[in-house]
Image (cartoon, rainbow, N blue to C red; front, top):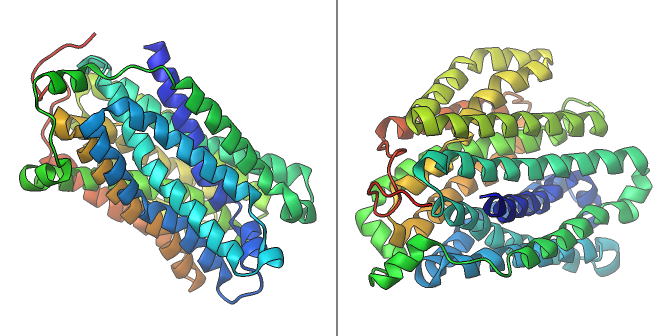
Length: 418
């Protein structure tokens, strides 16, 4: 169990550190890659969103082969691609040196990041969930999601450190490159740690029974459309709350005129709260069921919409965290375990990857762009209202989903895996 958690959780931390650091340095990257153009800040957010929008394609590719040739190979490949793309961003020349080629290369690296992260998190979840008994599934999957959230925390901490130790000029000249170098190198270390992992017992079993599906996506579309919609609705809150937390540094600094250092600290605290709540919710869901935890989180978040709006208008940002992030963390801790229980082994990787990446792209990738657009027009309540909409969708999914938290994953029969 410890080794399983180590190789999955460390990879999740590194993947999401790499993915988030571009957003946290959005202002600097705007000046480096798209200087002096009207609306250039929106272009950086569009490039950030592009990483999310390419995740479904990455998830489709990785999951197709993950369901066809096995989990372990794709589990190794995803972190390697992410590391190389992140290191590539750190090495890119700026607009001053190569002109329009600079943002084009940034877009290319971001696309590779999106493709790889589209396979990494679903691959980690499937690889871990298929090797543990039902009464530990929530714990293990929540640990991976918590680790991914801690990757955002690590990115925020690095941003704080750089902002505190370097001048604005140093950050723009070379300091922004440091976290991309670190993320790339650490990702390669994560890849090396996965060299000798074994295939999951459930995948070996379907190979021996001749149950491998030729085109998993078609199988899903024909027989699992309802479960796909349920899963996408559950992912809505995860994508939106992450976008909400990542968007706050830019919003606080740009629209509310707080210092960058305070804004980074605020987001780091938000991610720590999200990580703590996510882990606790996963553990509790193993005991009382996913549906109860999910519906409780949705109900509390919707009830907190009015207090959250008041906090946003009055500047009570620390209270805002408590009434938004903590309820959202209840859903965040359960949704991955729930989705693994919705799909059978031959299409489980595809079901999780497609639903997760579509939901994250729709609600996590587009949200920062829309939030920035609306906040730029003076509608500063947009981030809170986006959370409310996501809570409604997740609640509807929670009401319609089957409850299988006590069953094994071998075609949803009661099988205990050691």
